[in-house]
Image 1 (cartoon, one colour):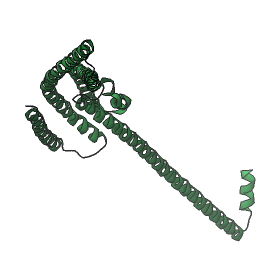
Image 2 (cartoon, helix red, strand yellow):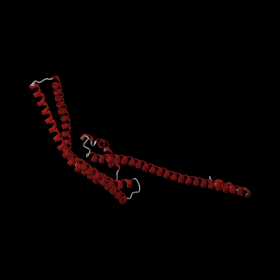
Image 3 (cartoon, helix red, strand yellow):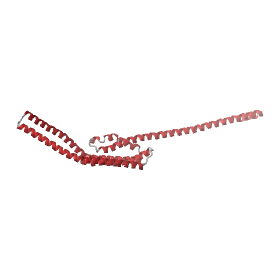
Image 4 (cartoon, one colour):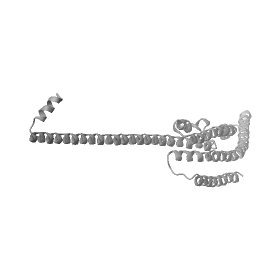
Length: 289
């Protein structure tokens, strides 16, 4: 086949040969240009595709980071609310009007948020939160034991208050009977004796209950004042454990934080609160005295 084409080409006139050669050169040049263009398009396409994939991956990575950061913020804000509620439990121990079962109600409802920190927190955050949680739990148990005797005294005072009211009502009823007997001119000795004896008996019970009430009030006040100071000191001690936790959380969230300045701020705040508490308790003692 090739030999036949060669013979055919050799038999052609020189002018025809030149035309064929020129056409062939033109064709090959066009083919080469087309191939070069296709190669260029392919290479450009590959470059665009790589850049597009890189852009998609970058956006995907950024979206993942944004989702993780949003989740961290949500968890840490919930944990912060639970921590505030936990510190509130310590402070509420000093308020004897709050029933024991109501002290930790809010904290119990929110403390699950602290457990979520263990799912996303870094090692430094976990260590700080664990130290705070352990100390908070121990503090609440210890304060509850100290609160129980005060609640017993308060419970007895409530009973005495009801008794004084009941005894006083019976005594006043005897006084009214005396008035009625006197108004009716009734001189029956046994009736007057009964009313008088009942009046004296109820008056004695009122007086005894009032004396016990005074003694218990003094006892409660003497124990409540130092107990309140203990509650404050405990709250301050546990609160200091939050400094490492705040530092670790802000580092995870990429927020600037000056731990030394924050520590100074916390200490100054606690000193002011301590002074205010001492003045308050001192005022109560002076009024009672």
